[in-house]
Amino acid sequence: MQYLVFSFWFILIHTASYTIAGAAALRFSGDLYRGKDRLYDFHRDMDDPTESRHVQKWFLPAQLLRGLLFSVVFYPALGVLSGLSFHLAFLFVFGLLFVFNDMGCANPFPHNIEGMVYMRDRYLRKRKLWKLYFETFVYALLGGLGVAWLIT
Image (tube, rainbow, N blue to C red; front, side):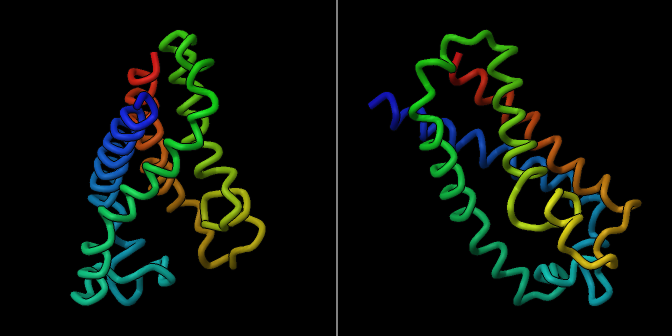
């Protein structure tokens, strides 16, 4: 039962953190995701009604599934993590969300290590990277705070 409760709260924390970070970042990063001339043309065009509806339809189910999968990974370590101070638990979870989930991710994207190795130069525009790091940082910050609260 403890695991189910943990997963329930983790899913809520993940989904809320991801949604807030994404909504905040989208206010100034539309040039990455909107229009025919968007930088990340490998993503769906949010100006295209059909593509936008697809994202709207699958956004919540995808985040609920991601939250569930992330929560299960924590199961073996919950006993140890619950013994940490809030600050150490936050740093641990923040690190997982920021480094493992994003910076060190094996799937190439313009702001992670694999992306800098495998992506074409046209996607690696340094002046645009802060927009991606902002979203990742806010997500890891909110998720780290929420999950640290949950496990301590």
